[in-house]
Image (cartoon, rainbow, N blue to C red; front, top):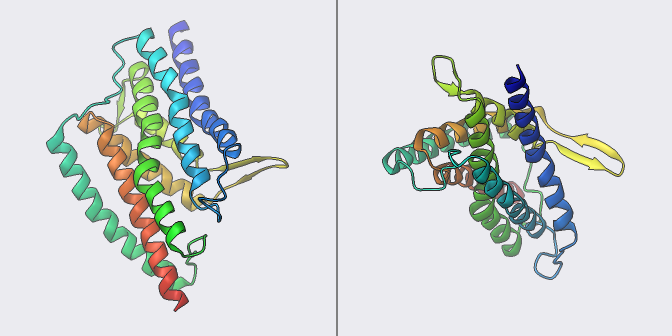
Length: 242
C-alpha cells in the first residue's frame, strides 16, 4: 500500500512538473523580448519559451538518473529501421489527414487563417520554430522524461499490450498542456478539438518513442506534423487573400 502511494505521488509530481515548468518558461520568455528581430511577435517568444522549458528539465533528468540509473530516457538513435518506417508512414497519413481536414473546414466556412501578417520574417521565423524547436523541446520533456519516469514506476500495458499506462497518462498531460492558463485575471482558454487532437498525437508520439526506443523519432514526427499543419494554413490563408 505504501509503495503504491509513493508511485502515485511521483506520477502526480511528474504531471505537475510537465504542466508547471512550461509556465515558468513563459515568464522567462516574457523578460527576453526582441522587437527588432520579431516585431510582430510571431516566433521569438515561443522560441525562447521552448528553449527555456527544455533547459529547466535538464537538472530533473540528472536527478532521476542518479536516483535510479535504470530509468531509460532513450536519448539515442534506437531502432533506426523502425524509426524510419514510423516516420514515413506517419507523414503519409498526416498529409492525407491534413488535406481532408482542410477541405472540411473550407467547405464549412470554419477555416482559421494564419494568426500573423504574411511576410518573410513571420513565415520563416514561425516555420523555423516549428521545425527546429517545437518537436525537440516538447518530446524531450513529455516523452523522454515523462513517459520514461512513469513507465519505470508503472510498467503495465493495456488492451492486450497495445499501449502503456505511461503513454496514456502522459498523453493526457500533453493534452492538458494545450490549455492556455492566464493569471491576471485568471481564466482558461482552450478548444476541445485541439485538446483531443493533442491527445491523439501524444499517444502516437509516445507509441513511436516506446517502439523505436528513441526520442529522436517522436521529435521528427512532432516537427513534421506542425510544419505540415502550419504550412498548409499559411498557403490557404494566402490563397484566400488573393
